[in-house]
Image (cartoon, rainbow, N blue to C red; front, top):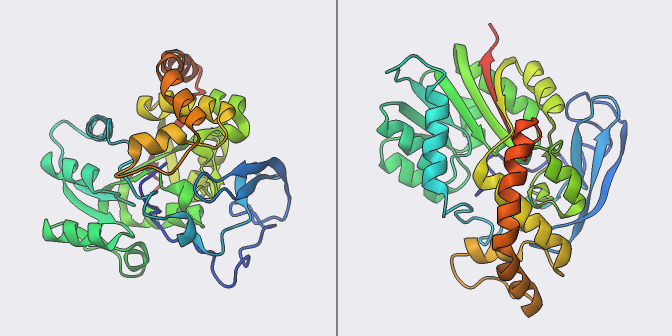
Length: 328
C-alpha cells in the first residue's frame, strides 16, 4: 500500500465507462469471479475481484465513481514510518546496482509520496524529478529545487529531458490505466533506461492463504492485482524487458502476514495497522480487536518472518518487484 494515489483513479467518461466487462490489458469482456465480498477497511463497503479469462489480469469491481472518497486524510499517512528510512536506502542501493559504479543520472519517481526516495537519490548525486497528486508535496519539492508536476501535467507536457531511470513504487496497482503508464514511462526513458516497479504479488503464498483477509488487496484503492505473469505481460506490451525480479520486501511481507492473520480473527480489518500508522487518534475499534492485535502481533510476526523468507526463496513472496530496460 502506498501513501497516496499517485495517478488519478477516475475512469474516463461517465462512471463505469471503462466498463466492468472490459479488460485493461487485453480489451476483452471475459471476466469471471475471482473473489467476492472483500471489505474496505475505511468505508466498510465490499468489492469483488474478477479475473480476465484470456490474459489472467485481476481487477477490482465495481470501479469507484468517486475515488476521493476512498483516499481520506487517514489514508494519507506515512504508512511505513517505522521502516521508511531503511526502505528508501534499500531501494536506492537496488537501483544503483544496475548502473556502473559512480554513475549519476536523471531519475523520475512516479507518485513520490513524501518525496523521501527522490531526495535520497539526489543526496547520492542524481538529478531528480517527481510526480504526485498532493499539492503540498509538490510545493515542498519545488521549493527544494526538484522538478515536480501532477501526473496529468507530466503526461501532457513531459519533463525537461529524458530519464536514465524511472521508479514506480506501489503505484501501478492504483492507476486506472497501468498499460498507458508503462507506455508513457518507456517514452520518457533514454534508450536502455531502467524502469523499476513494485506491486503486491497476488500469486504469493500469503495472498493465496488469506484470501479476502489479505492486507495488500486494499480494495478499492488497488484497482488491479498483479501476478508475475500478468505484470510481465503488461510491461512487455508497454515496451519494457524485465531484467531482474524479486518477491521479498521485508517491511511489507512480514506485516502482511501479521495484519492478515489478525483480519481473519477480528471483527474489522486493519485495526493494528491503523494504530501503528495513525497521526492522531485512530478510528474506534472493539476492545477485543485491539487487545488481540497487540497480544498476537509479536508471535505472529516471528512466524511471518520465517514465512516471508521461505516464500521468497520459492519466488512466492508477498511483494513483487520487476526491474526492466526500455526496449529499443
